[in-house]
Image 1 (cartoon, rainbow, N blue to C red):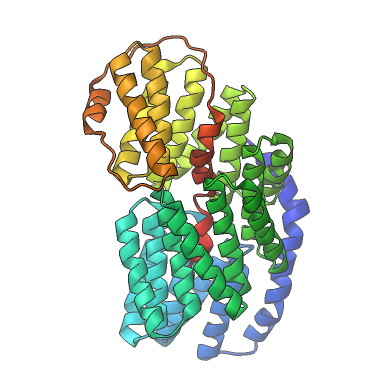
Image 2: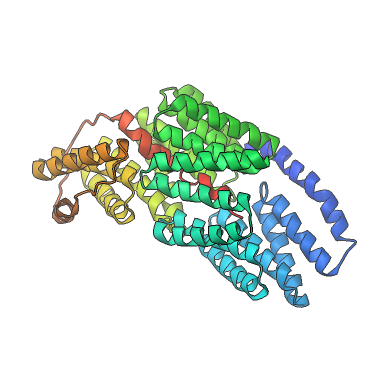
Amino acid sequence: MFPKKIIFFILIIAYPLLLIAQDEAAPLIERMHNIDGNEKIDLMNEISVVYRKTDRYKALDFARQAFDLSAKADYLPGKALARKNEGVCWFFIGSTDSAILCYSEALGVFSEIGDEKGISACYNNLGLISQETGKYDEALKFYYRSITIDTKLNDEIGVATTKENIADIYIYRGEVKKALGLTNECIRIYSRQNYKPGLLASYSNRGAEYAYLKQFENSIRDFTKALNLAIELKDKYQEIMANSNLGYTYWSMGKPEIAMKYLNHALEMSNESDDAFNIDKTLTTMAEIFTSQKEYTKSIEILQKLLKRNEDTRNVRQASNVMTAIGRNLIELNEMDKAVGYLSKSLQITVNLNARYELLENYRNLAHANAILHDFRTADSLQDLFAETYMELYSDSIANIRKEKILSDIRNTHVASNTVNWIIAFLLMVSLLFLSVLVFRGNNHSK
């Protein structure tokens, strides 16, 4: 929907950022031409890391060159690092299958040469992929393997990096106060070590956690700290993320004009080809603003694009969020058959993931839709589940959610079209939409 705008602003705004990366890489590239052997391979891996923040495909190219040279020279440390670097690039680009292949190969080589730091990094990064595809138990197994190794190596920063990812899982499961406690622990470690990249990631995480708790002033404070650190560190990816997060925070505070300023800036800095996660977050928020302005068709156009991207990358949790948003818009357009179809499919996904914020929103929307369709029995049961889940989330209760019977009813219910005027309960959208907007903020926790 925005290709011309994206291209135009990449030339005007992103170009200086690319020059920064080029300036940083230039002396390394010049030096690379004057050396050979393993030293050259190590330098190419270093250049790949430099380009990772601004030009993922250049980073990918240098990682692949380093791998090819390592394979010819049978230089196993360079080969393992190159594959890991390639995996990180694919992860940021959004190709999780390619990332998994690279991490798995790197893990094998790191294990062969006994590089425990490399092994820990691969476990962390594999955990990230499991996390972002909704496989939380699998992700935790990878994370705890990484923490065990980093603790043995006395690597506090490595431990904190992985704990940040675990905090993300707490958020997805609705345990926000546990996430906040873990993030504060990481901030203390990073502050003691004066490790600014870690502080940047932690402020971004804590801003999201405060947002879940509806402490928006604290959220704005931390996202602003993250933005300033991103600018200082010349981290384009995190700068886009901070603008996107600030945009949604102001939107949730009822300030759409300020929100759009930050969101447009995030979009203007984004490159659709290599910043898939960031542009998804920004467009998701913009779609919600269009919905609030009753531009439902425009919102659905954005959301369908997001749905396809997340289905292509097998990100079922994010795809579920998008289905829910599409369902809401379809109700507004009186397309009830389609709306219930999207919402029911989303609910089944969120039940499998035990993603309680998404469950909350799906219960609410489906209760409303079934009431319109005069299926009051199903609607009443869904409303009970909504109230129960809401109380659990906002009291940090761990009580089990009763749901199997009503889910069976939903799967067996035949629905017909009807017309409805639907009032959006905005305050109840804050938690869900923050999840969809901030869902990928942990991506810079790769090692």
